Length: 479
View 1 (cartoon, rainbow, N blue to C red):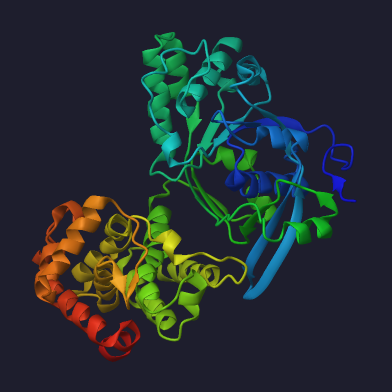
View 2 (cartoon, rainbow, N blue to C red):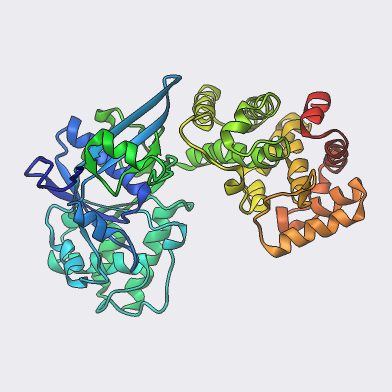
């Protein structure tokens, strides 16, 4: 019979200091931040624990509490060029709180003199301003309002002591997440007519860091849970699966690095003055290659990221686009970009993760605009010519949005207006007209792409060849 996982069956280190409040109990934070806290507890003198706050009314805090905050992280991927797999117990989560059930206990977290950090991941939609959150006497709806209530309680409890102002590091995947969160906290301070001294304390003493996170976390490995539980010897209902690769870039003062000594544990955490370059690198290389991969790989018969990477034609195509077109379009050190790019390729070939292309296909037109088009235009500006492979991905995207391929529906997942526009363009049955109509839509691209010499004609030619020869033959014969 499998043992339950709790404080009765596991001996955890006593005397840890509760330094961190974490908004979010989901898979990502547990496999990323809490896993890192576990590492610095093991390998440095950090000696810290985490209190987890459930940010919405429905969540997993009850399950976490049933296991006394204990759970395992399974990491799988490529390490030093070889398949890697590990299962590790995380013990740093001290307790969980559901503020919807006990708002008073939530506010009391602010009274902890040892609190140094507040970390969050409440999804991209979590950092938002809700005007219906008109006070802090009862539990607010939005995460920024809950955070404001917690900070306000701490300000009052410690009489505005600058030394008790925490450092806040959001992990939500939006640009300038820390700056945006600070903006909303200050707006709530105004909305609630708080003491002007509180607003000054937030503005001057509380540190809000912008951050960028990167680790693929598929979550609970339901298909292999029995096998995993046999290996660990516990009935763990909160096992979380993630890839081995991890990167956390934190924009903030150097003093934070000494308080969070990730570097002493060999973790891939970078403290920087500006993370703009890192964000650009990730968006253009990792996300950009994903976006190019979807239509090219799918039309070539691949259905997962790994299948696309292993494809005899699509795999080399993606590598050429990456190293010959995307990287040269970026203004960063070439060696650093190539190292990151090779890590990305290893991640895409991860034999343990099945990442469906159809799952990445969501809003591919807007993704191309943000993730791929900047590489195309930058390359064009630098080289005075069009990047063939990146343009081909654009043509493949337009063909993908036609809605069918070889008698089957393509898994388009976009707004009705976007889909209708492109499919109406395909009614012209003339490749140059299709190309002209789609590329001139400024709502798609924020500009008329037909203004770039030769782009409309090249896309039209690729569209025709894709239909006549298929993806693989077109890549082999025309690129």
